[in-house]
Picture 1: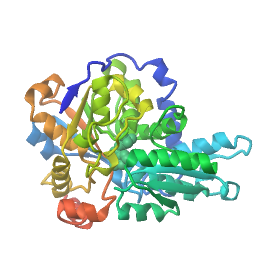
Picture 2: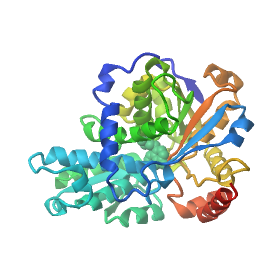
Picture 3: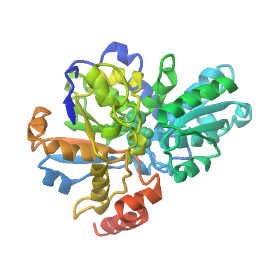
Picture 4: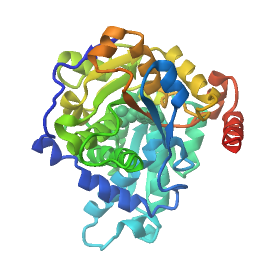
Length: 407
Ligand SMILES: Cc1ncc(COP(=O)(O)O)c(C=O)c1O
């Protein structure tokens, strides 16, 4: 399913949005995180996939690989830590805390009685737990029934207390809010709801770092954007809003064409585009793409997506699995890549879209198109990855090393 967004705007980035999210804040977030010792590399790779581009009849396909920034293996490591820092700075304004010192745990004693809580489908909670452990505050993570045991263990490994509930992601969001209220804890959520926007804004703002790094890697000037199309996978819409807002602010009316991709069963952004406001998914929200299995669009994210996104589309779980295998295989000129279930939705969306020549032409795809995809996670659930791809992530990494060695 695909809908071309009639409200997509080709005009300068609106001032009303700039006051909420802007490139300057993204740069500040980046500077803060650059000191965090959990990052294994300061910048993630931007990979060209020339064989894939040739096969699809496109000028270029670029993949920004967010799986290798830290052992947490997902882009979410750019969101929750920034929000936690901004929260602590705002909550304790007189203590003279400084972001680098906070991340280095230098104020752990002052923060031992401070507790943050969040619902998660895996990656956000893991990032929040890791950040909380670094700064030295307490962290409680609420998991819904469909979050796998291995994802739970990955979060608990960072010292978070786990609360398991029945129900789905949206139920866990409600549970986190009521536990916070009962206990005087602070919710650090990646999704917004009525009266709760500042923290999800800070989470989304951190994702702008991906756009900033991509433009730097391509030596982008202020004139033309070095890519023509961007695919952004959607859960609650935070990733898409963080990146779309950055590119819209930077390029204004000349921004690239941006397309949001979701699992069919968790199509809350697609449905939002249909009805014109942030709304719920039409399906049972039980996709294999765990990070995208969200039933309610973030109203704050929607403010950016409403005008910043050119098309919304959905894909099937099997298409994601096929895309995982394809990236894992690699080819003579394309590096084999470990990309998890939610990481590949953009590629699956691209493949699906190109099967409809009319829609592809309407969205401006041709032999000169330069398409940016963001691989948002590696094998964050390793046994599920192995089951779906038919080999372990370590085997793909082995093939990757051989590919690089042969260059
Ligand atoms: C790997 C991965 N990709 C994409 C997303 C979507 O992000 P958002 O919920 O901000 O739309 C998530 C969300 O958890 C995720 O874990």
